[in-house]
Length: 455
Image 1 (cartoon, rainbow, N blue to C red):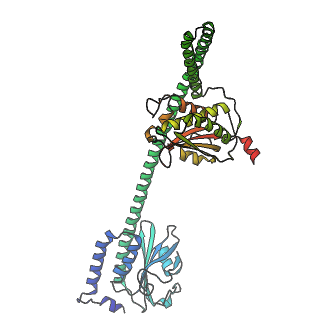
Image 2: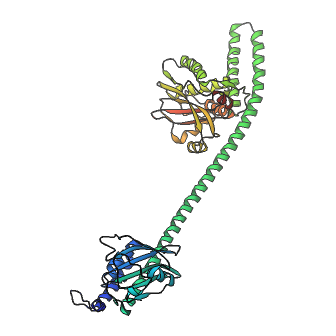
Image 3: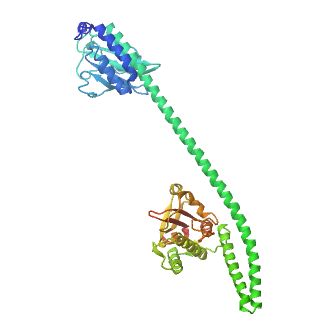
């Protein structure tokens, strides 16, 4: 049988040596473009060993721990069709002929397998075998194993050819491994760059938030000090105006005094709003049912709005009790209703709803809310106005800033609302509603004591 392999010729009359040379040359050219280990193993089994007139071949791949071989490609009885292997074996290093070759890293030719105690029959019993390790550096990458049904089928020629094939295959496996390592390093580098960019952006965001917080703290402190001093002046002016009003009996002469008193009252209201904005107002918190309070304030607001603005209530009726200043809460609710009314210059609908919400740290981070994790009652004000552009939403909480027309004007309404909510342990958010208009949300912290009582 050995003679028939060496003396084999193809249809063009080429000798075995010519076939072997052309096959190895083709392998040397094609190997650079083989994209994966799987493709390489099957190419070697079918397009190299198969063309060299070997009638049976199995290629084993060594695991990373250098303890086991597994059959990954075959040509002959183990490969009935395509890229399938019948019963792919796993052989530990040191066991059987292939395991010994992997362990000793030395090629072996067995002329008669019946005389070898290490032979492990796979599909059909063979008589001769040639087995070579694929080595790169100090690692076994795999084993090429060929069997033959006749004894003495393999000699130095087959050993020389398969040694060349094993060396080329080992080199390509290392190239593929290095390419994979390079891809991993590149992916790690890209991920590291992305992580660094995210960290830089987070730091910039935190710095901006810190700057804004310090700026608001400074503005708030100045506003609070100014409001207190200005309130003292207003008190003196108001008291003197009352004395003048009592001293002057002429109604016509009293008219300017009454106007001055009204202006003083408006100024006092502005001072109160400044104190709320500065989070320095004197709050007297008590247990409050928000659903009931919203119902009361909405009735007052509807009288102010007449028929131009319709208020629709969608209250949960089982809102958790909250501990807040009732008077300041009513003022804040009314401010939000008036703000929505003014945003709908040609009329519209204002939907007010309540909802019990529990926030985790993840929820708060996703919603970008300045809140501590816990239970909250959310009061939503959804109008049908023209809405607020994204780049102007946070500015609506700045003092005297307004997105409305000059006839409506700006003031401290939303600024005071934010100040009151923060002083009460909550916050305000703004965003577009699902339809036209804008949605403001007030987050009131639920009372821990009341929640325990409810449970």
